[in-house]
Length: 400
Image 1 (cartoon, rainbow, N blue to C red):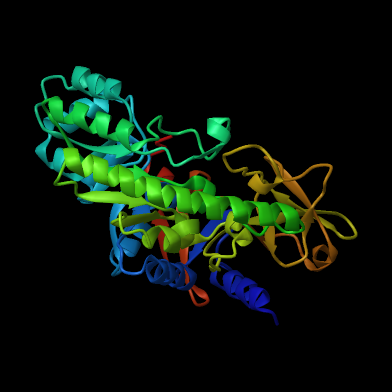
Image 2: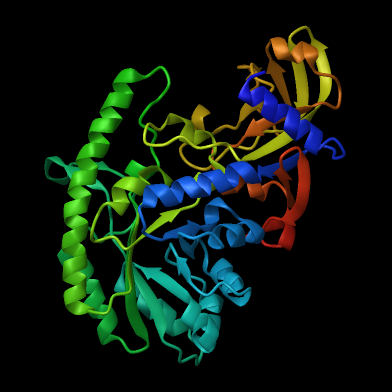
């Protein structure tokens, strides 16, 4: 029996009393992945990216481990909810236009002390001030650095289109704008190198593309390390008491942690290890989050149909954004249909051994987005479900 076959047997035994569709998190794999992230971070604290987890119980589990500290959130409403729930260090990773949320933040000392907001433009400060509604609390601010690699005089850009702040002078200018404006305090810098952390460098069947990605990433790492250090020096000249410099992502933990200028690492997807991380040479994790769909039809030899399963991930549309049938091994999509909203045909020899009601286990392409499809996660230890906990959705929240 292969390791994957053994996992399938465990998951089937653990959930035998539960009807699919359902989602699980294998806690042994979750904890092993957490330990690996800590090892790769080399002593620097890891801020958990909530977008990749979307379950308060599992956020708490990660933060209870040595080596983890703080949350990186994805909306202001979520940040305030987490702070009200007792999380006391929440960094909002994206600028917001949530005026009601800013009014709440500016009026509550506890929330203002716990939540740090992201900006990359002084105009965002004006929006916050206009939304205060009388609230006088000082708003903690983080500045986002554009990490993209620019080549050929800027004619070629590699990396996500996020912040407009690329140079040390640009970031320092915004830091000065914040310090001149009453009611705000610069406390941190964030730089997410998605083209390094979020792009696999070992694409199956694409050796030339994989080699090109590795070359690009090596160049990008060197350029960003030098520029990030210059940015931090420039901002510290304006804000000597800067509290943190956040960088990284699951795919670049060890290289980002090696930079002296970085004080903490952001990671979250590496706790669940979705399928997009199968194409990395820098680390190997254990799939921890899976979902199961029931067999509902047997249309013919070598084919079964499961209920639903069409859960594409965000990003540029393509096959790499689709979930993959994982257990039993050897199933594949019908290329004429793919995964569907209400039914998904699956082809391959294992189909003939599946009965109506049997579970087929899938891995989502990205991490936390799976939780938008399920109200609860069943937590598996060994071959038993030891707890069932709500996702954000299960607690009545779909923040985005």
